[in-house]
Length: 384
Image (cartoon, rainbow, N blue to C red; front, side):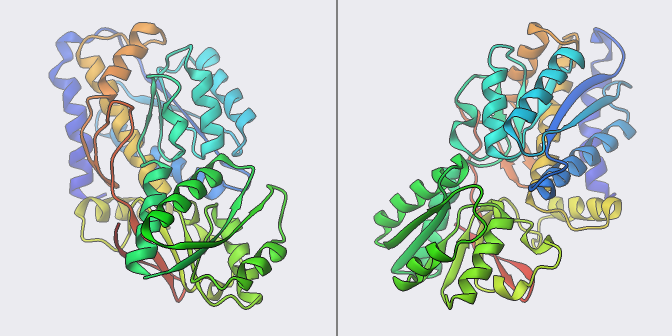
């Protein structure tokens, strides 16, 4: 692990060493993580899990909070809202954690955030971009930007980066993530003077999109916007190319991981652009250190979900550290929960995914990085 990475961990740990005279209790501090480790979005969930564990393990190895370690308790929600709420209930009632990282994708996170309001337990999702995630209670935070931010960035890139005059949309009509992105992108395209020539929806059970794509291709759009996750985006791109579509594909952060699909023919992805939270081909030392540490531990390059997971863990642990320094007893309960919530709101992090501060709605304000796929590799285009 690089020196800077160690320095960040040690800096957080020092908060507690300097405040040892105020230590209110002893023993390990329990934090929960809800993430999909199996199922269709397991690539995302495992990336978050690995990154959070990377941070927590390094923090504990550096001395923890005045010698007290963080116990990370992890549950697999399979990317399902019901499973996510069940995991939440276990963490709160059985495990008695003081705060929770998660969930990961938008639909489970929306369900968990609604369930958490009455308990007022500190929650930070690394990656759920749906605007409503932080709308239910003051206990909810996010480390990522919101969907409206990236949908606007995509529309701006379509205008200035691709110089498109026409676009089409194919989206998941039953998915809040996909529908929300579609609506904002469509409105921004109209504002940008881009004509939306076709809009086609599909259900969650669909695997054949050829009927919708045939209708779209007949309209000859220069850009096809596909606001969905990597498996669906790959299938749409493959079927569209097979039907003769020659334009560009434009996606969102859910595309990250598409090159990790086993057996995928990456040639179908040439001409794919998508918004993302960070780029691996950067000059940022913080990013280079994170990638180096992640690769040494897991033997793979971390995707954006991993980077956001790492930043979310950093934010939450810093908040817990500050609460302990104030003499707050780290046991599940209203006083502890509120103290951590108050501290999260004050965090200013120069993180792997950029400079993070929280607005009054507990959202972060960031720019989006546009990534393209060229010859089976990701390449950053710039910020929009």
